[in-house]
Length: 479
Image 1 (spheres, rainbow, N blue to C red):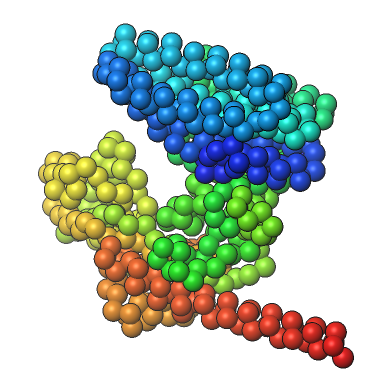
Image 2 (cartoon, helix red, strand yellow):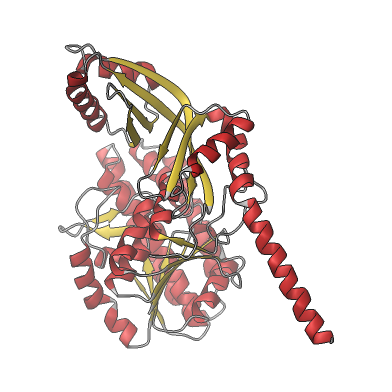
């Protein structure tokens, strides 16, 4: 059994849904399809909900009209009258429920997280109906399944955490009988339900996360993430135009790339697959014949495979006069950042053990606000805090990439030759990534320099070997 997930751009209109449906039918059964809302629908639903909270009937109507228009265009692309009419009735019911929710939001005068989840879930639910109808039109039995009947979560609306044990029980009860009957299940991405039965959403990367959660719950042989890129790239092509598709990466490499800025997978997407040792394959809906990238537990290569960067960070340094002051000062700094929901990307301690350096997400108010909060927490100590904004972290990622003593020094030399000032460095003990902190303005130069030094030569050697093999094969054929 395989799980195939299609993102918003892959299901943006009737033709793309039909293309995605054909990809589904090319895969062996049994299969579960996970879909996002059509591109543009989620934003329009949120706009309608916010307008409803303000009693702005004009903006609410305009936003809902966009949602109806997108769904009507997709419905019109279903030629089979029975399939189209069945989908039309089901979507009309969802639109009516949406209108009732918007009326309740207007009556409340505010948009709660609970109502926000119910409203945005409409997009995925409508798309699952439309995809199932399209698959049926192409000759295969398919049924939509709303995952607020399957994916069990806590009650943190907007960023719910799943309960994998309960999800597995629900999947066995709701989905497995359909698969056993030969039905292709089209499940909603992004949504689940609390123990009280209220619809929740999984937050950023939620549709991909839904796919791996269902894959783990159903013991899938593979999870496929169909998107608008041909796989994991060796760098952001907007920064490195000659970036290459990486054929295979490990779970650890995928999580490091996602953690440090790569947009293909959210870090938590991989976790359910890791737990069940399920391969995750990233493919392009627009180039379905391409092999994409497979993410597995082990890979054969021990070189740097990709360079990524995360901009807009803050470099925070905590200094103390005496060694024994560091532990309480660092504890106070961690407490302040935890209380304010600030994500810490890396932490390092100087060799003198009197300095801690934190690389963190930017905060509202920037360094002045952060220093004020820390100053209050550290007022009874002699600790001092320095802060630098507009910094970025560059990550060179690859299993074993940092295992040689010269690897980090070589990267530093490459950056020095490129005229990039390095503010801090960090080498992962797992040897999965080497990190360099640089100014935001230097990111493009830094990424290109490291990519050209570590990745481009390998690709060129591979291309030369491929060309020699092709020439030899041609010579044998002619001879």
